[in-house]
Image 1: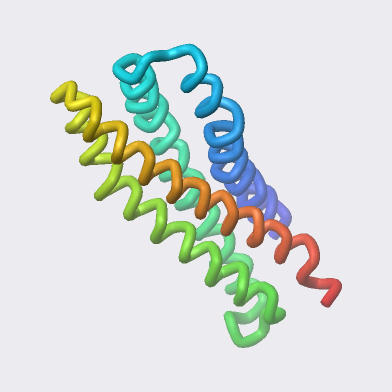
Image 2: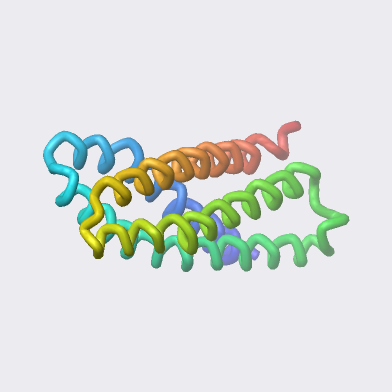
Amino acid sequence: MAIFKLIHLLSVVVWIGGMFFAYTVLRPSAAEVLQAPERLQLWDKVFCRFFNWVWIAAFLTLVSGLYMIYQYGGVRFVPHYVHLMLLLGIVMLLVFVYVFFVQYVRFHLAVAAKDWPKAGAILATIRKLVASNLLIGTMTFCVAVLGASF
């Protein structure tokens, strides 16, 4: 089971760490030095690459987590904090799916059409959703670390 825990943790690091970097470092830096067209094109490329990693990380996190639950005998036999982790993880996944299939598709099309005002508005929505997912991911991490002690 140790290998599944390692896969689980590494996947979480990729997903949450990527959101943290994008939100707290890349976003303000790009806003300082790039004009809207270049900044929006940069984000389109960043999302294209990062979302590929998020799909992999989300899949591995879900599969490894469910496998570890299975190893404990099923959801009835895991501690309550694991239920909360699973719930928060599913919420994160749903937010990501919405960002990818609804917001990012619209954003990508707006950038391709050079509709900078529309792309900027969509990017602002994506930013808020990423902030929400970063908060949920951080809470999930805290539940994982502190859960057994309660």
